[in-house]
Every structure is written in structure tokens, then in C-alpha cells.
Image (cartoon, rainbow, N blue to C red; front, side, top):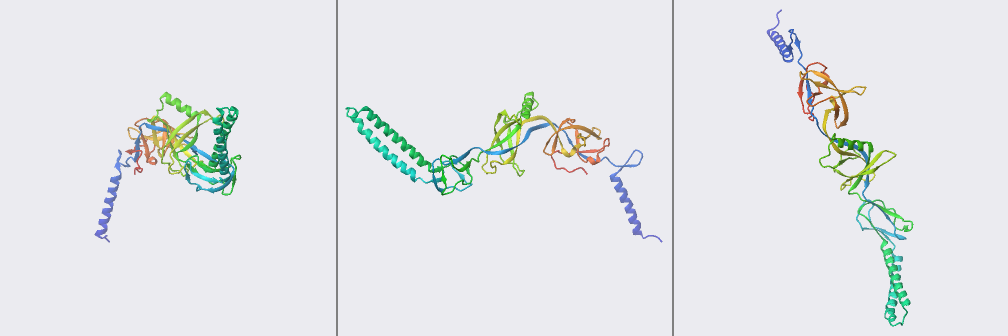
Length: 376
């Protein structure tokens, strides 16, 4: 029984479609057989570039100024005038110590001064006519001066009853309460004030690395930063970058003999109050520039169990060639290549699973900083 014409047409169309697919994906080889075209691979062309030399160093945040507020007279605390954890200004009254006994001393010394000064004033015209001896007059003048000094001391102590902030900064917890007896001789601490803006970042750097950097700069292997000053940035404990750049203040001239480290201090603005004394952060210290550095994306590097590394290159004849390389430090998502590559080399960055040594490929150039997916 013959098949319907529609079935013949379907079989004919299917055969033509299959041949079209084969023709689109294949071409005839020298022997007349079909051969797959070279696979597509993404490549970057290596070019040396300038790379900032940045050292990652942990450290802690410290206040620029710290002031302990201590009692300077003995007495009972009557009032506390500040909010704990608030910002106080220089000269602001924090506590009031009972001033009554000190006011009484001021009043008594003022009366003593008045009496002594009146006696000295009465003796003054009499000494010139020998009605009073010169010695008595000198004693009266000295007594008046001593009474004046006593009054000044009493007034100073009376002023100390109003306990003021010696600096502007953030005040911590109240260390005494109303009714507490504070003592000048025991130096009772009443509060602690820390200056928060600007604020210090203190860290340590290995002295060996400092010496190595100095030698490389002197030999011309590295270049100074355009500004001539090292740049300091911070990474906060949550992993985010601190938005303000710091300023390097000094590098200590003494090496810690127990650790071989050198102390370094930087200053950061802290108007937002994000940086707190004692906070552990990571600093990035940019000190120089490596003028001729080759970088490759990390996914393009094959690292063997023995630690050796290599990349796949595309040669001038568009064939795959493995190339051993010597890796340096990791910079973001890239590796520094210390040796093994030169300017103009084409490194396969995507499609490595299709690139076997010696096989032909079709290279597709991509920007190494782009998000272009692997060639399909």
C-alpha cells in the first residue's frame, strides 16, 4: 500500500533540513569527510601596566586626644550636667562639687587680706617719719602679700568645684554619681573624654618590608606615587570600605626588637563617628608604583598540586600552547605574573575546556575588565 503524498513530503523536508544543519556546522576535510570547525575561545592580549604597590596591614583605632576628668578638690558631688555618651565641649561644666566650704574659705581669706592691707597702708606714711620701724612695715607688707596669695588659692579651689571638660570630645559613662565623695589626693576619676574627629589609625609594618621597598625605590624598580605621599585607606570590620582617605602622619624610627615591626600612624576624618577607639580594622597602605606589571584574570590560570602555574596561549597560527608562568601576589580578581608572559601574548580567559594543547581555535578578543561570558 502506497504512503499518502503528505508523508512523502514530510520525509523529503526532514532530509533537507538535516543536510542544512550539517552544512551549517561542518565543512568537508581533505579526504572528503566532515570536520568540526575550530572552537571559539575568549582571549585577552597581555599589556604591561602600572600597578600601585599596596600593603594590607591590620591595626586599631585610637583617639587623637584622651582626657581623664579627675577631682581637683575634696567634696560631695551635688550635680551631673552631661548626658553619658554625648559630645562635650572644652570648658563645659560636667559636675558640681559642693562649693560651700570653699566659699567660706574665700570669704575668710578676703577678710584677712583686707585687714593686712589696711595695716600696711597705715604703716606706710609712718615709716617715713620713723613713727614705725622699717621692719614692722616690711612685715605688714609681707603679711598683706601672703593674705593675697591665700585668697587666690582659695578662689582657685572654689573654681575647681565646677568640674569642666578639658577638651572637646565624646564623654563616656559617668564614673561617679550625685552624693559621692571625691578626693583630690586620691585623684578620683569622674569621667573620660576622647576626641573622635579626627582619629588615629595605628598599625605595624615589618621592618624587612620597609627596607625592601626603600631598596626597590632606590634601584628604580618602583616609582614614587605622583603625590609623593603614601595613601592610606581603611576596610571596616563588616568588610566595607571606609569612605574617607587617611593621611600618614609618621613612621616610627625604632624597630620593636621582639617583633621586628615598625609602628606607623595615620589620621582619618571621623565626622560620621563610624570609627571608634579600640576598633580593629584593616588598612591598605599604597606606597609606590610598579611601572611594568602583567596581570591575568585568576580563572585563566591553572595551578597544579605541586604549586606550578600555567596559562593557555593562542599562537600566531591560532593553535593552543601551554605556557608556564611564575605568579606573584593576587590583586583583586587577578594574578600578578612575575615571569613567563610578555607584551602581546594572547591568553585564553574563557573556553579553556575546549582548548587542548596543539589544537586550532578561533580566538575572540575581549576586554579583560568586561563581563563578557565565555565564547559559545
